[in-house]
Length: 172
Image (tube, rainbow, N blue to C red; front, side):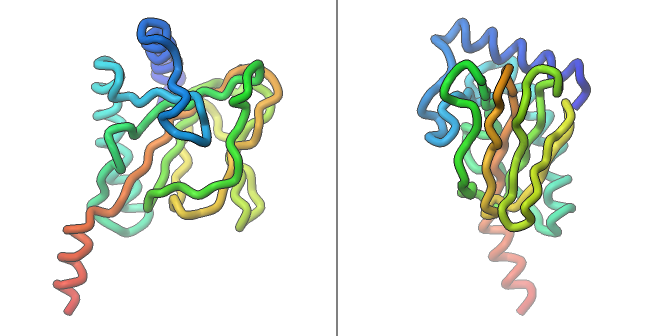
């Protein structure tokens, strides 16, 4: 995504949070500060465009098709805030076949952060607008930020069961 698009999404999600009672603490239990893009009519339109681009990219990258978003709550925006308790996220795996993260914040907006994968012992620190794709079952964590605010868009996708069953049938 462009820098301007990322900045616009952050503004829209903060406006939505202010108008709707704040950030949700229970959308996802690990992150504790999320808003589903479907919760905002403006962000719902953006979500559709982003998903339309990312699902085929994920399907091509992982050589599987078709993919569908896991639930109505995905993608969602997660806010990490060094001044609060939601600075990072503990070691976990996602309940999805595949996950994408889009960095919405510019790197100057926070200190620390990144997505760390235990298997490779690598931490990815994305630039604003960059996308990280990974299998959902990979063990990973969100490195804590120590200053500022970090926003990421996270989406969970699964292989469509009917399509996967059809592919297995046609291979026989």
